[in-house]
Length: 285
Length: 285
Image (cartoon, rainbow over all chains, first blue to last red; front, top):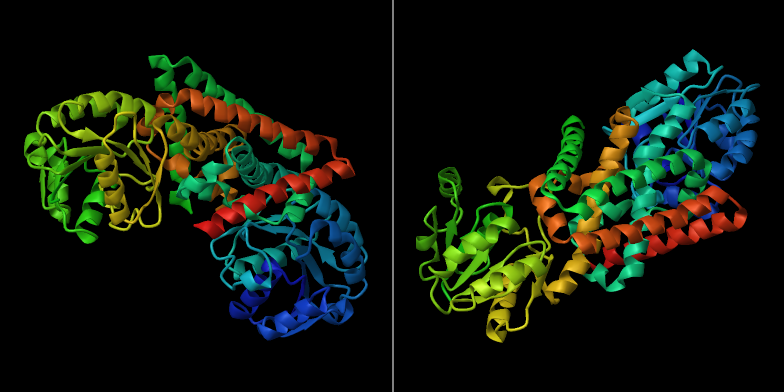
């Protein structure tokens, strides 16, 4: 293997380019839609080459990674499919997988082999300026083989993410979407709703926030158009997880409302259960 | 001023003791209920003296800070009141103020001057081992003078927190409780409910969490008995803020459910509003 085509120059694309050169010996070619992004990639020395010419970037690539918004993927993928070598392997970094895999797998049926991926790394920051080679170190990357995905392509994609420092796990596209609805999309919804709810009830309260509020709401700083697309693309699973969350909140509120000794005990159990799970999380990663 | 009595040896008491010696020239005496805690304080060299004898710790103190659970405050405060010099100033670090001020102010009416405080610092960690002198640096401390609080005592308490690195703000005890319901108690409830909700829906999902979920739920690692007490003591305000939060969540869920183009635009606005507020938060602190 030799040439890696990174399609899209944002936080993830830039970090993949940096990591693929630092932790492996890929020749990295990066595609960006805008001239300014190409110039920034060159200024920062990210990748071996950068271009707005998708054909040039795809030419001779052994592996291509789509790092663009979900909604833009089908159009770019169709152009990519006509430019990559017939045996090239293609993956992506989209945060929703059922939709992306359903749209992209057919595009690469004739030419190339597609396997979906979702590296669970990143932050509320965006853009090339936030890219770093160690972004993926220790994070989980979920690889989502679909019916008909080539085993060899799956193995190659998994090995690629491992090289970048990820712990790789496999889920079906559907399982992936249900899982990330719980651990990523719902938390984003909660963070945004919490900020908006506090702002509506008492904007002056923001002057008093401590580290707890800042941590709890950090992800609400993420890019709104990207998150609108993610949440929309995974609507049913997000709604289901939000309903369950509200039910759980109401369970606790009922205890708080009644304020008997037994309810205080149950509140303590509720909080202890949460702490135990949360501590386990800290210990295991 | 000379002698500071720190009543309680946990994260906050220990950090106050460290900071009062590092950033000012207080002689610091610490009270702990258990011999083991006194031994640990001495081992770590925290404070000038440590003792289980409240009378000895209070003797000659110019300022005393109650750093014990809210529920334990009245009993200890009553003993403290009989041991401090008549003109001593007393404050506390309780996360709920209406209840604490109502219980403690009368105790110090005859002897000493009480003013409530709530330094918005700390973390999900607890205990002496987590104490550090810079815990308060840059954090907000809310001082809550009640009707009848002595202006000189308020000024002294505010100056004390500033010395430790806090930005001091004043609120009435009632205003304080409504504010922290929004920015601290509700976030805690959400974090705990999120962990429990995910654990109930799919415990396996915890294996996939990224930094977003970890940040959003960090506060759920806090001590359950302390949080049970806090939430119970501020029940009505917490319930009100939780109802408003659920209404805000449902507002967003309705947009997600309908999935028209206009609703996607509104979702983007909802998320943009949250991001704008959240970014302002980051910029200002």
